[in-house]
Length: 125
Image (cartoon, rainbow, N blue to C red; front, side):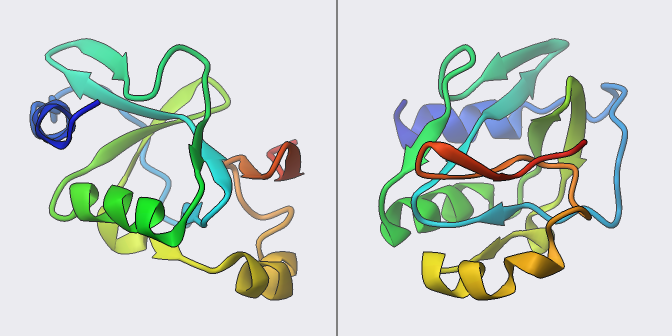
């Protein structure tokens, strides 16, 4: 999907859409992580990377590309069938090595699913 289209999807987000906000959640976007992204246009939720397909961010540049798109926007993340609005200020990018060192802080505390390669590092119970 082109950047312009992705910007349009995120900018057309309907603020009146009923969304549960979880203040303590923070999504960790890392290189080689998989993430399902969705955006809301009018009352319709659109998946940005295909139905049920996880986006494989192979490089730090790809993770940075996602962050650049989110700058000043909100995004909808599917967390166990609940769509949650996460604000860009809560996003962080870690290298895979750094994440491996600190992941114990997040395991068991996050509701988002975090993937590395083909295995799930952590997911909500």
